[in-house]
Amino acid sequence: MTQVFTPRIEDWSERVRESFSRQGFMRHLGARLMEVAPGRVVIEADHGAHLTQQHGFFHAGVSGALADSAGGYAGYTLFPAQSSVLTIEYKLNLITPAQGDRLRAVGQVVRSGRTITFCELQVFARRDGQWHACATGQQTLMCLAGRADTPVEGRPPGQGAP
Image (cartoon, rainbow, N blue to C red; front, side):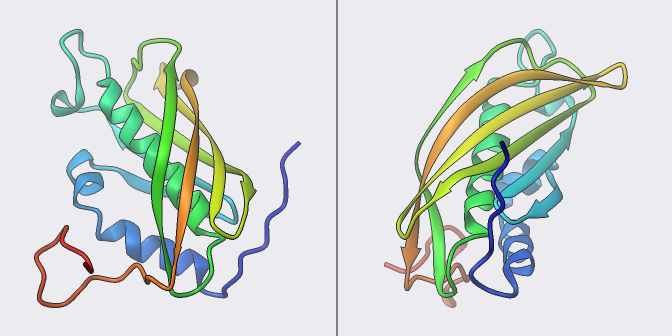
């Protein structure tokens, strides 16, 4: 059963989209936000030679990166103002090779608490127009209250507040 979540702030969707736009690694992967809903985020990336392993499938690292970001941003939709998100841990079971022309990661919040949030992760590969499950997992997130997810002026990208 899918739970209905209520965001704590009005601009939750805009906040997620703005944060995602600053992720250099997602840009490198060609990843796009396809859906942003309270407690749910979908991210996709098209197949490219730079995203493959030696057999031509999407590399498992791509599946993991998309799943981690989808879950992280799903949780972030429910976080309070002046906060940011960090992954504490995630586990991804690869159930079949990620073979296809596009990869889709879905992050879905299971429970969102004051500090800790739990998410389900799913990854699908599109092959011959059909989506096939290729990975499933779970994730634990931490809400960094009082630490807004904004760039820090005067610091190179990736070097946030001390």
